[in-house]
Amino acid sequence: MILKASLNDSRILAQMAIKIWDNDSVEELEQEFNEFAVNSDMASFIKYVDKKPVGFSNVSIRYDYVEGCETSPVGYLEGIYVEDCYRNNNFARDLVEACEVWVKSKGIKEFASDCELTNLDSLAFHLAIGFSEANRIICFKKDI
Image 1 (cartoon, rainbow, N blue to C red):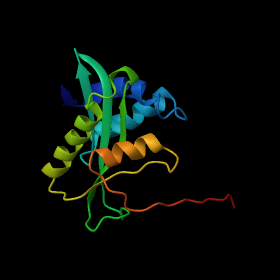
Image 2: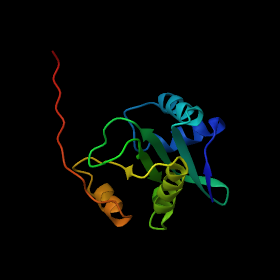
Image 3: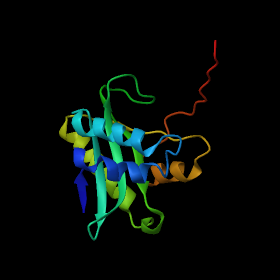
């Protein structure tokens, strides 16, 4: 079962998210999930198996330019995670589909995502569920 997350789910989401975004604290992630719960341009979805949360996805609506897209706004997959022992069951695909349904319900025609150049597992996953690669970039910064 996949359910749209509410404000009450932010801690559950943060406890899973810390496993992929370990530069943040659980408390910081919980605040981010609070924003997803109350902002009408954002949503999180939780996959449950036997009432246990085993994965999540985050989606937002982006109004700025999104690489490779021709329309605006665009639905954007902000994050996806499935616990290791529940992978290879199409749960991540199902979570992305929940995001796509949510985006389509808002009248949006394009859906995008990204991953690090070195994250070959994420690249393979995106390609396997129907994304096509739009571009590759390397971002730069410097302190001034």
